[in-house]
Structures are given as structure tokens and as C-alpha cells.
Image 1 (cartoon, rainbow, N blue to C red):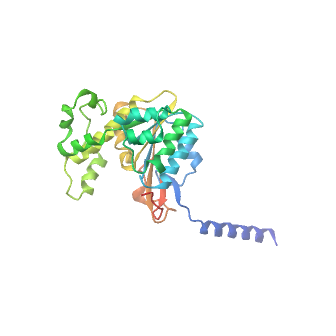
Image 2: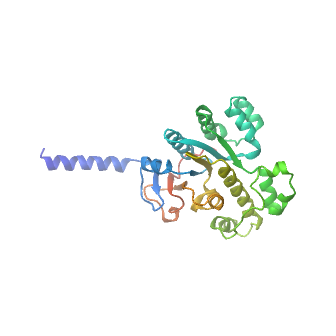
Image 3: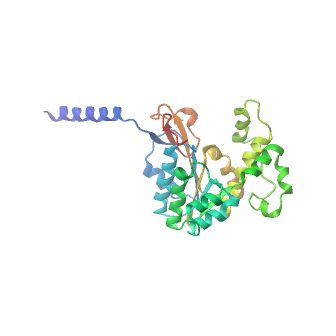
Length: 284
């Protein structure tokens, strides 16, 4: 076979393989350009804080969180934190990390999410194995529920020991932030002005505990629902109020029917975007 014909045949064969590929996800930059995992990892490992915004029931998200965590840990010291653990459960989490209680003991003492065994236990167990601090960053949900009903003022009457589980009062709040405005839009007129405030007290509290545990020379990786950090809003906004100038990169998750081209509406949601096939099986 002539060299040019051979080359043409090889190219056709390779293109045929590419056409037959059916990726479960593709990584993109904010502008919608495909990016290699290795390049994303280099950027993430140079930050002070990395936010990974997940779909709570998406296995690709949870696998990617664990892989990013392991790979950055090979290069840098880490501190981990998560929305999925509320501050009043920090003691139980610490006891487990210190091997003073069992997994069953942690389940008894802490309010674990129903998908903890499959989706978050691998992160916690990695932290335990590598002696990495893991911070329960979220406000206890009962206080967020109170804010949703009666506004920030309801927090003023809490005893000091309970206020210690929340960002310092008064809570910074900008009702014009896109994330908070969109919450009311999504409710189709059924939301109340206090609903975004409940989101804000979660964001502010998570930002506060991240700020309290920033460690020189370490990367703080935070796991949260995508809405809490998309568009550099939510937790990111609150954290920058307290720590202006720190280096932050965000990762978020989107779902599309065709993952091979990032839709316009999904661009610029984060510095890096995990675009997952919408037919991906959910964990619950």
C-alpha cells in the first residue's frame, strides 16, 4: 500500500473510533474549551481554595472529587471541608478521624446524609488514612430553617454556644447577587424574601469556617452543591469578603444530552466544568 493511502486509512480508522466513543463526561474550561484533566489539576493544585460543586446524586461528581483530592494530596498538603457536615457534628467527625469511634459510631453521633456510605465516606476515609483535617463547614440545618421562616433576626436570640456553629452575626447579605435572585425566580412567585437569606446563612457559615481553617502551604478543598459556588457566587462571594486576594478556583457540574459541546448557558459557571451525560445513573 502506498504511504499516503496507508496514512489516509489510518486516519479514517482513528476517526471511526472517535465517532464511536461515547464519553460519560468531558471537562471544559469556563469558555467551553475542552481541557485535559492534567492541565486542570495543575491549576487547582496552585490555589488556596478549590470549590467542587456537585450534583449530590451523581456518581461522576463523587468519583471526580475523590480523584482530584488524591492527586492534589500527592503534591500539596490539604485541608478538606464539606457542606454535607454541619458544624455541631465536628466533634463526632474528629473522633472518627482520630480512630476513637467506628464508622457505626459516627453514624450514630452525626447527622449523615443518606448517600454518605457511597458518596462521602471515601473522602472521609481518605482524610483519615492520610491524617488530613476535615472540617464540618455547614450551619446546623435547624437554624437555616428558622432563617427561612423568620429571617436573620431569629439568630440573635440564640445562646453563645449555638452561635459558635454559625458565621458571626450580622450575616452579610446582598439580595441582588445572581444566585439569590435566581432562587426566587425558580420558585415562580411562590418564594419568600427569607428563602434566599437561608441560602445566604449557609454560604456565609461555610465561608467562615473555610476562612478559619486556611493553612499556609495547604490547599483547602471544599465539596458543596453546585449552586453554592457557581458563577463565583454564594460561598465564594462570602469568602472573598473575609479573605480578599486569596487564590480560588471553582469546579462545577452540568448535565447535557450531548456532552461533546458545552452549551452556551453552561459556560462561565465555573473555572472548570464537568459536563456529564444526562443519562448517567443517579445514586438515589
